[in-house]
Amino acid sequence: MAGYSKPMAVTPISELNDRARDIFRLVVENYLGTGVPVGSRTLSQLPGLNLSSASIRNVMQDLEEQGLLAAPHTSAGRMPTETGLRIFVDGMMQVAEPTVDERRMIEQQVEQGGPVEDALAAASAALSGLSACAGMVLVPRQETGLRQFSFVPLGEQSHGAHGANQALAVLVGMDGSVENRIVDLPAGITPSQLIEAGNYISSRLAGLSLQEAQEKLAQELSADRVALDEAARSLVERGLASWTNDASDRPVLIVRGQANLIDEHASADLERVRKLLDDLEGKQDISRLMEGALVASATTIFIGSENKLFSLSGSSVIAAPYRNGDGRVVGVVGVIGPTRLNYARVIPMVDFTAQTLSRLMR
Image 1 (cartoon, rainbow, N blue to C red):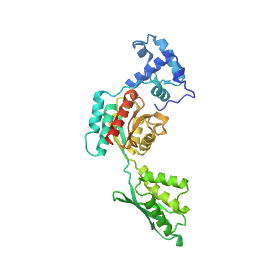
Image 2: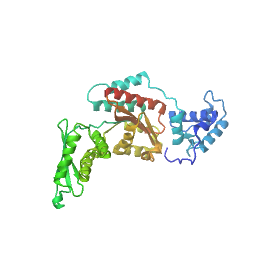
Image 3: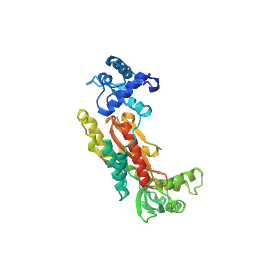
Image 4: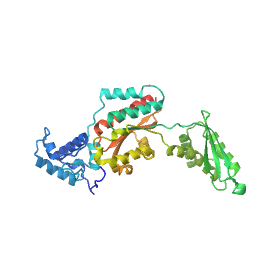
């Protein structure tokens, strides 16, 4: 819903009377179901409301002035603003749990055997098919357990006796794998300090994942328990960070069902859809958004321009973390689609898929 400016003040839903709440809820539910603005005449024909079109129109006008509804120029109907959608999702929506058939489809897709990556791709495809959105899964990173770490100086000895400008950080994993990264050296570092820093990591942090090693290092630094001088400390931090930064720059994101985003309503807003497809093609920013859900304990919902990534495409993301056998969050599953997606149906569907993946990871 890009293009609609937010009012300076928005009326909380708790301050609306029962009539306004009912009409607001019906407008939102009808809009999410059809994708088109809802007129007062449409609402007046619904059973149970017992209000004239004129009365409904007056309430809808009030809701528009209060920042909850908007009126597109091409229609006499109203649609929820992004703020209105957020209020509806947080405080009024009644979720519809996945049906038995939907649960069975998700479980069969995810639990069909084979490599974990295949199950994650299948989960993304299942969500896409059931939600009519694009399905996304952020794949858990392969964390390397440290066995040995060393620094090998590179380049000219431009600092004379003080050593080189860069070094090759060599990591030997617990599985025997060997990886290299080039790191910049602190000014004045000596060859003996390179050896000292490598020995410290190998002896004190062996057996830990990179994340665990960084956490332990931070704890020991704060408690001043690291028997290294300032330059060697800096080198240890840089060496460990070189792997973490590399991994975060290249997250693995599986996307399925982009074609679902080009539906019967897309022709009226082709620029928005094109921008969204561009976002998905790049994956980098979407991945970082999904990574934001890694720290959440429950399903996270991003609606439209609440996230600057979607200020142009006017899209929504529903994402839920999934866990390994230790209960630690290792990835995120979710969907992306227009802000008018069926939140009540899709939110529990994403949540159920995350639970199914968590069971698979045990």
